[in-house]
Length: 101
Image (cartoon, rainbow, N blue to C red; front, top):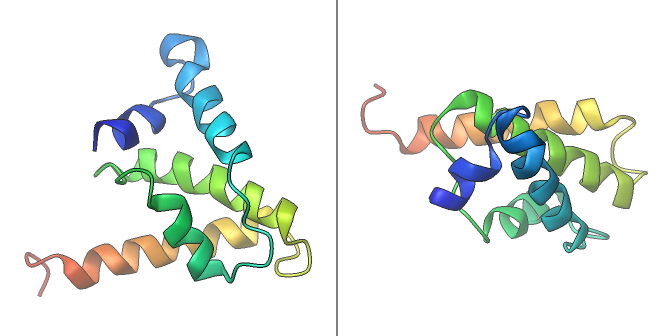
């Protein structure tokens, strides 16, 4: 949980080190040939997402950039991949949140 909190920090925090670390983490992952949902699961197997939407946004935006780079035929832009990834995460949170009726 703490890893996800740290990686999702605002870009100004510690001169952008958490964002650089997230970028470096992503360079170690190979999403080539994985379906989109498999790639998300693989990406998130190393840490838990934080609870704050802005942090999730930053973490999933970097994922979408990397996924699109390694699978250029799946999405036309990284923005399209990001919108889908972020939506999947939010829907999953809603599905498993007992406080939502």
